[in-house]
Length: 198
Image 1 (spheres, rainbow, N blue to C red):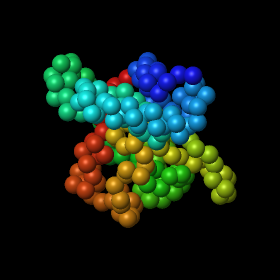
Image 2 (image 1 turned 90 degrees about the vertical axis):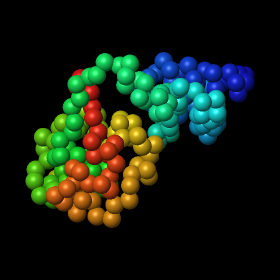
Image 3 (image 1 turned 135 degrees about the vertical axis):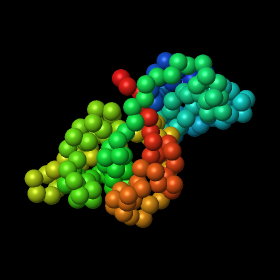
Image 4 (image 1 turned 90 degrees about the horizontal axis):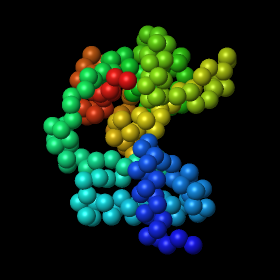
């Protein structure tokens, strides 16, 4: 039976090779261990990296784990890397994404009702960017599609879980306000997410 040190070493290798967030339940199946044990090993690794002040970090997002760089080194990384063309989300896309994030699972009709305009093309774009996905069907007449956010949404906005979203009492009021795109209440990460062209 592998030791704790061996398991942590293997998990470290797995998230390095995998690149994308690795679900703890997938790792648990690989090791034939309970999910709670794998979560514990991953969280110990997070502590190990932080304790030694590593240039790498492991971040947790909804019980998935990903290797990333230490945010304190962002300036140096930006200086090294060749600037890439960025494509910002439009105000319409940010509005739809905010409605879905706070109201999920939500139908297109509900989104349109909150925004006051059709959202078909925006939903298609957000789906292509893998920020939202279809997560079932409503029991309402016609059984419309329900939309929710993805783990990629969490990663792009720097959230571990949806519980990290800032508290907003009435998302409809925020979305319809004239200064939604520049609202001081929302962080730059939340309202000005930049996605690489690809």
